[in-house]
Image (tube, rainbow, N blue to C red; front, top):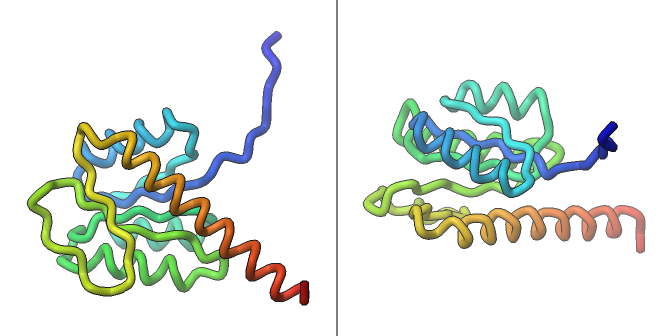
Length: 140
């Protein structure tokens, strides 16, 4: 009988209203070892944020409204568990990233290794910030 391992995979919430982009990105991230939940709208994403915890929230900008993605990321940053956040720009001619302090990932088909590097970096930075916050709170 094969041995079963219980790994704690980094959890990613992927929010995109384009089904093809959402399915493709979910597949790529899962194949790279991430546990991915997806949402097709800001409302669905907010529900998932309230029901679960994520290391990273990736959201498209234009969901059901032009700034719905920003609202998803704002909600994520207000969660107690403080996930890393980034806007997804799946098309080269996407609107410019708002000038707020947001990470932005432009995804091109030939850029999958870069995408995975960006995702790993965001999750790593979040882990470092969390550890530093816990050490501060412990008085170390």
